[in-house]
Amino acid sequence: MMDRRLLLAVIAGSAAWPGLARAVPAPAAPARLHLVNAHTGETFEGSYRDADGPIPTVMEELSVFLRDFHADARIPVDVRVLDFLAAVMQAAGQASATILSAYRTPQTNAMLARTRFGVAENSQHMYGRALDIHFGAGLEAAMRAARAMKAGGVGWYPHSGFMHIDSGPVRNWDLDDSGLGTLIAGGRRFNFDLQGNLVVSAKPAPRGAHIATVRERHARLRQLAHAEYLQRRRPRNFVRF
Image 1: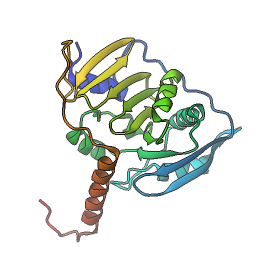
Image 2 (image 1 turned 120 degrees about the vertical axis):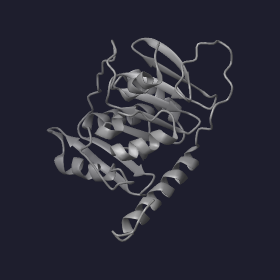
Image 3 (image 1 turned 45 degrees about the vertical axis):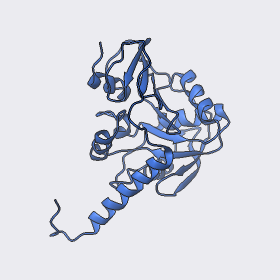
């Protein structure tokens, strides 16, 4: 039986589990991406690797583009998650992807974990290995293509209109608007509610907590970013409670 902490650890890709292997697809060189950051409005377009491998100057640029905008902090991005994204976009015929979440500092990740289920304590986002993305039309097809590749973790959030990919171990999970979620890892399937409790009954589950839509998610993150920006502008002797 899996408890909530272990459930989130498997979602994060930090729990040992038989069969959680990964095989990141080998991209064609040069590999190109066209990305839009939903929170900063910034865009990236170009090749991030050539015949010699990842291009250092471009990877540095992507580190800035995929930074934690809450804290204005960044780390190097795992090129494997970029390769995964490029392969998914090519397979699904997507010319551009919108980035909803990339790198997160431990502080940002903890803040998000307090407000919503599915944010793991040891999330791959904290290591520059994960992306939450939106394509618009064709998102479900892209999710299915990503899972078929078995190149890492793939989370599906149909009610909120985005998908998660990471370069961690192979595992899949769903969170929809029924109040239930599903995790498939190590060849086993688990159903859970939005509090992370295992559901063992075959009876239909009552509707759970509301999962934010893409618009609500964007609004919440913009509010948090604005609040943190205002706090950074306050004088050092300003007393905060």
